Image (tube, rainbow over all chains, first blue to last red; front, side, top):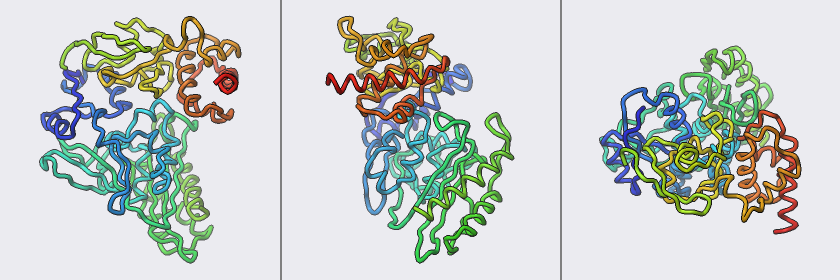
Amino acid sequence: MPVTAFHAPSSLADALALLAAGGRPVAGGTDLVVELAAAPDGGPPGALVSLHRLAELRSVAVEDGDLVMGAGVTVATLREHPLVREHAPVLAQAADRFAGPQVRNAATLGGNLCHASPAADLAPPLLVLDAVVVLAGGEGGEAERRVPVDAFFVGPRRTARLPGELLTAVRVPLRGGRRASFQKGGTRPSMDISVVSVAASAELRDGVLRHARIALGAVGPTPLRSPAAEAVLEGAPATAATVAAAARAVLRDARPIDDVRASAAYRLHLLGVLAQRVIRDVIDR
Amino acid sequence: MSSTADLDLVVNGERVTAPARPGDTLLDVLRGPLGLTGAKAGCREGECGACTVLLDGLAVNACLTLAWTCAGREVVTVEGLSRDGVLSPVQRAFVDAWAVQCGFCTPGMVLQATALLARNPDPTPEEARRGIEGNLCRCTGYGRIVEAIRAAAAAGRANP
């Protein structure tokens, strides 16, 4: 995309006006700048609207029973913030395995979700936490609408965000007793795009799993939940047999492809192994 | 800002002005108009870390940082680490530990190590390795680099 202009609004209202006029939002730039460099003359020209001056997008707080994280919060902050570590440790765990320090210092929560890679590392944890994204702008002007993360990803690199809208925050409902875990697999622990990622969460009461969630990355067109595995886990005893059955069920919801990083067959194998690990971790935690 | 314009920023402690286009990266501006070639253009996609600089004290890939997001902010490159010709403790440790082979990754390694030690003055070998997980050394001289980081940490504790 030939970049025709660069804007750095200092208020959300100004940012929304620039987006309404057709500007393209950019947060950390760790995905977008690579795209721009790969095809500097590709696609229609456009203006960039940098979000880096919007302090209101960088807060982390607990509000009305939710952990509310601004879209501009960096992955480095997610990894270390005390409120994230307390209320959504699985998100801090994924942030810890995200790229490397330089990228973590720039990449943002909102950017990772809006880029909507099927391998987005923050997506599976947010899916198992029943997270909701907050969108402002577009037809609604400054009015907000909320979309469950579950309904936000609609295809590879496609989301429910409408033209002119800006993802401003992610809300995670607090739930006492919820345990969660995340694993990713790749050719090396750092810097690699996930070949497979898995997150799971559940409550454990009297040895029985409740509110079970399991979400998968890089094995379908979007990050996705596994209804088959969740059905196996819901109300099941926390036993090795349950873990094995759920890890088999996960494979029914995966639609991996062959690509340069891994074959579909290897992805399915790895998915089964990592699914067992996260479910076992949820039980033992 | 819609064509080439003057970008004001602070580089290595000095206020500077450089012409920059809307889509330029910080690396373009550093290596081009500012003539600071310490930050290397390796992969240009955030994988190798050879372009690492400090932006307001945080290590970032200059190749992924849009230049105009740096307006008014502080950038430190490897050229800004020594003081009056005296190497910084991390630079000194890299020299003393023979942590430099071809040298292409060195500026990025040194800046990343500087950022790591600012936050963690006494990293374990594992923490030092994880600290440079975003920096590639194609000569594979990681052992000496980790030694240098640990030596710089020890020197920092001896002479805080």
